Amino acid sequence: MISIIIPCYNEEEAIPLFYKEINKTIKEMKVPFELIFVNDGSKDRTLEILRGLAKKDKKVRYISFSRNFGKEAGILAGFEAAKGDYVAMMDVDLQDPPYLLKEMYETLQDENVDCVATRSVSRNGYSFFRKIFTKWYYKIINTISKTPIVDGARDFRLMKRKMVDAILSLKEYNRYSKGIFSWVGFNTKWITFENTERVAGTTKWNFWKLFAYSMESIIGFSTMPLLVSSVVGVLFCLISFIMIIVIITKTLTIGDPVAGWPSLVCIIFFVSGVQLFCLGIIGQYLAKTYLEVKNRPVYIIKETENDL
Image (cartoon, rainbow, N blue to C red):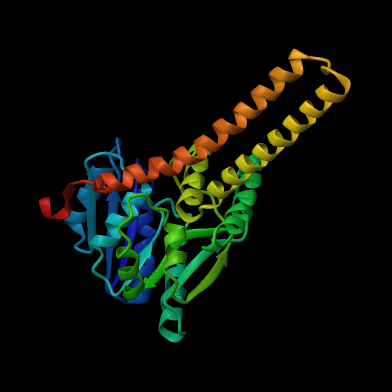
């Protein structure tokens, strides 16, 4: 059986269209399926639509959270609920083409791989600024992290059960799925396709949400920022020590140097800014540690199809 995890947040327009398209693929493949929709605290008719689908179609399951916990929580909930020998994850907006599932499944059957993942080779629909940001993000994360993140990688992938079990063995609270998929290893084959516009509704990811999400990945899979703050601190200590020697030497040889409060103020502001920047880096890691040690659940389930 193939389990498909579909996180949803305010997707009342997209769900019926996705359901229609995925059923076309299911009929072609002739393999048992279960569709696990995860309602991440939607405020529209998403839950009502999922209830209706679950009542008329036994292969449709749903998990509804008590509030919005974020996409990563939805992905984890889907993994924990999945019963299939193979598990896939897809976006409900049809930016992940359902027809690729057939090729992905056949690849897992015929080749020695544990996962078939997708990556977009274009960024159609992205703003110019977002394209630049995305390009530099992948360059930075792959430079500072030992866990490689494939440029253009999407969450859409089909995995064997043993890989899913490995992912579930990671109990961390702060999750970044693309990094986790890479970190657990296993043989992965990549399929490329052209990025498409969402079929309905509006994206829930604005620039600042994407920026915060990228920071999650950097903090979760690299300690390089801490090293940078340490190096900057040592560098400024050396510069300060050299400047002290220079000032003492000039004072003893040619007298008191010409004083200038503007330059002094600029130096104070600059050094203070660097200090606050380094403290901010340390604070981010401390905050993530704080969230981990509280040991709160990643999500809380309010309702499932079993409650109907």
